[in-house]
Image (cartoon, rainbow, N blue to C red):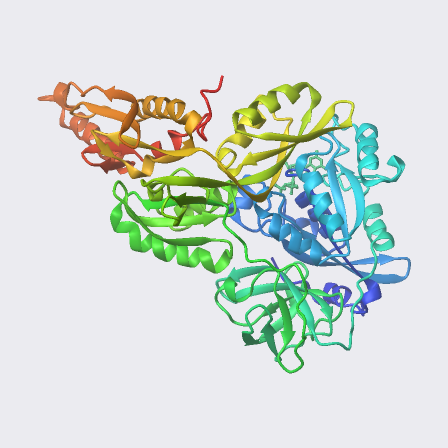
Length: 620
Ligand SMILES: Nc1nc2c(ncn2[C@@H]2O[C@H](COP(=O)(O)OP(=O)(O)OP(=O)(O)O)[C@@H](O)[C@H]2O)c(=O)[nH]1
C-alpha cells in the first residue's frame, strides 16, 4: 500500500495536534456486526485510503483474520475530518470482537474518550454487545449507539433502536442508522463523533505518560508499539522508559498511522501514534504498560495494566518427533508477536516431546495452531484443552494441574476448578433449551432479564472446563445460531473431579487422559471408548480400548484385527496399482501417530472429544 503523496500528507498532518481538534474513539460490537467494514468505509470517506486501494476489511492484516473474517489484532488509524471550516484528527481503533481478546479491547477503550457501539440491525443486541458496552461504561466513554447493515432486507431498525435506546438510555430516534457496506449514514456518524465525543485532556507540560494499547512484531522494524499520549509529549531520539519493568530504549521513530506509518516530529497530549525502538520481543513492550521518558520520568503509571493470563492449556506435539526443534523455533517466533502466548516443554509417554501451551481461550488456541501449521509447515497434534486445577492432598500439599497426567494419585482432600460468570442472550423460545445445556454443564443460574418481549439475558456461573471446548457450538446449534455468549473468570470452586485414563492394549495413553466430574466419568468413558473405536483404524491385531478411574475399568471396546494385507488382492496384478496402494498407505501413515504398536490418527486426540465434549452426559 503506497504511503500517501504530499497532497494527502498535508491533509493528514494538519495543526490538529491541538487536543481540542482530536477525537479518539473505537468501534465496539458483537462478532460480525460490521466493525471492520465500517472502518473501511470511514477510511474511504476521509480519503485516507482511496477506493481503488481498498481491500475489504483493510485493517485486518493477518491472513487468518481475513480468511476467518474476524478481527484479532486491534489497529489504530488517524483520519482527517472537516466539520465546517475546522479540520479535526479522528483516531479510530478497530477492536477484536472475540471474548478471547477482552483484555485487548479494554486497553483500546482506555485509549479513547468515546465508543461507537455498533449493532447489526438484523440481529439486535448480542452478548458481546453488552460485554463491550459494560467495558466502555467502566472506562466512562461517551457512547454513540449505531444500527448497522440497514441495507439488509431483514433489518428491523425501529425494533432494535427501541432495544438499544432502553439499554443505553437514549431516545430511539437518536440511534444512528448506517450501512458500512453502502456508506449510507457514515458521514453523519463522523460528524456525530466530532460533535459528541469530548476532546482528550491532559497536562501538556507534565512528565510524559503514554499508554500502550497494542504491540505488534514486524519482521523488518522489530516491535511497533501503539500508544495514546495522556500527558506531556514523546519525541524522536529521546530515551523512553517502560514503567512496568524500568527498561529504557532509544526512540528510533515516532509517528501516526494513516493507514500506514507516517513519521512525525513527535506526538503530544491526546495523540494516538506508534513508536519504534528496535526491540525484537513484544514482551518488552507490553499492552497496558505506561511509557515515560528517561530524562523527565513520570512518578505514577496509568492504571489498568495486567499481564495477560492463560485460561486454557493444551499439549502441542509434532507428529514427527524430529520436528520438535522446528516447533520450538516456531513458538519462539510467534511469541515475538503474541504477548499472551505461554509455553513450556512437556513430555508425553504417548506423544514424545512437545509443549504445554497456555492460551487466552479456544479461538486463540486455534489461531496459534493454524499459524504453526500454515506459516511453519508443521504437522501437529493438540491434546484436548485443559483448565488449571488446584488439588489439595491429605498431606497438606497442593498440586497445580494444567495437564491431566499431572493429576495426583494420592489421597486427595479437595479439588478446585476455575469458574466463569457467563452472559447468554437468546430469543425467549430457547430459554428452556439453554437452561438445560447450562445445567448439564454444572451451571448455576444467577438471574435472567427480558431485554424486550422476545429477547432474554441469562446469567450463569459455569465451570470454565465445561465451556472451553464445545459449549459455544452446542449453544449455537441448539438455538439455531440465535444465542450469543460472553464470559469472564470470577474465581474458583470446589468440585468432585476425577481423572479418567484411556488404555490402548492395556497401556495408559496420557494424551487421552481427562479430568471430569465424578458423576460424568462413566458417560465420558463410554463415549471415549466408542469414539476411539470409530476413529482408530483396524490394525493387524486386536486392540482393546479401556477407560479407567485409577485401577477401576469403567468402559471398554475392542477393535477387531484387520483380516488381510492391503496388497493381498493385487499379487501378480499390475505394478502401478500395487504402487498406488502403497503410496496411499504411506500417505495415510503421515497423519498417524504410533502409540505403542497402535497407529492413531492425529485428529483422534481432539475428534474423540467432539460433538459433546467436556464430560457432559450423552447429549441428545
Ligand atoms: N449487508 C451488509 N453487510 C455488512 C455490512 N457491514 C458488514 N457486513 C458484512 O458482515 C460480515 C462481518 O463484517 P465485519 O466487518 O467483518 O464484522 P466485524 O464486526 O469486523 O467482525 P469481527 O472482526 O469478526 O468481529 C461481512 O460479511 C461483511 O461483509 C453492512 O452494512 N451491510
